[in-house]
Length: 406
Ligand SMILES: C[S@@+](CC[C@H](N)C(=O)[O-])C[C@H]1O[C@@H](n2cnc3c(N)ncnc32)[C@H](O)[C@@H]1O
Image 1 (tube, protein in one colour):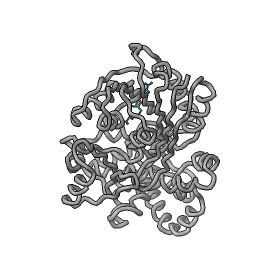
Image 2 (cartoon, protein in one colour):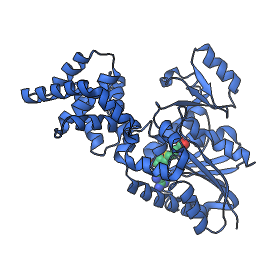
Image 3 (cartoon, protein in one colour):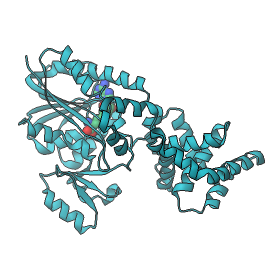
Image 4 (spheres, protein in one colour):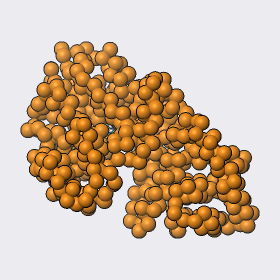
């Protein structure tokens, strides 16, 4: 199968509802995977504006031809190849003369109309920000005058955050190492590091030595929230823990015991690998946070509930979310998130804390869910809240720290 045929197959599967990361992972040993990813992610990130252009030019187009044209429109605007080479390669992907002629014609029309199409794109937020209207409308309703910050923040390239294990190197020492390796970075106001360019894991300084971990900056706020509220956890339960980013960060920062659970045994293996690499100890188990089958009746003073969610705050990284998720999915997530917290509440000591986390941008899964839980759980006291707006340097996460006050 040629690279382009593979790209068409991946895009077809994603449009049929399959997960983009899974589709890409199937081909991770392909030697051209970087280029394949570049085109697949590029097409999906620009899906709404590309589709708009295609349907301004043609009324009817077969699925395969449509995907070939999507690839072409993306490459015409984003590759170093000369236009004729892009067109010639893509036209070769269809067998019959009629389709070849048709695709050629669509590309020519696109080149002819490009300027006026681009002007139309700039006038429509769904096309300009390449997001479906339901997301734009919901953000506008929920965040009023600052919803544009979300739209901007969701449109950057995914950032490459790094977490430093401060028991092994100080921030200053690690920055020296970045400088020595000529790795450009920025540090945010909370001393969190983001590299200017993504690196291969093998090139991340001291990764295998357990000094650094790849973790989005927005996902590194567990310790900030606990410290700001003078909480020193002793007995922690991380209920939805894989791949273990927050589990490991807690263990790097507190002298505590920690049980890390996840529903997926495959993903639990990732936690074990991370613990091993970072030389940390935790009890790990497969279990379902919807029920208490796994619980030995010992209570915890901190429960981390990094609940399954729409993951809309990670759209930069997972752009298929904007194509395949609907508002109905968001509602379904809110229901399961409530169930998980209702269940975990039983395992929390009196005066203990539950840290609720999502990587969703929607109030339904965040502030509104916390309000619902407050109304439905006796002694549910909101202590602190943090909504991280997506930026060039981070995804978007939401944190709510609550206390069990009986
Ligand atoms: C947002 S991820 C957690 C990320 C993790 N806390 C970290 O910082 O690396 C959500 C996790 O919840 C797990 N999960 C989903 N449903 C679950 C359930 N009912 N019980 C336990 N874990 C669940 C998923 O397998 C996934 O690994």
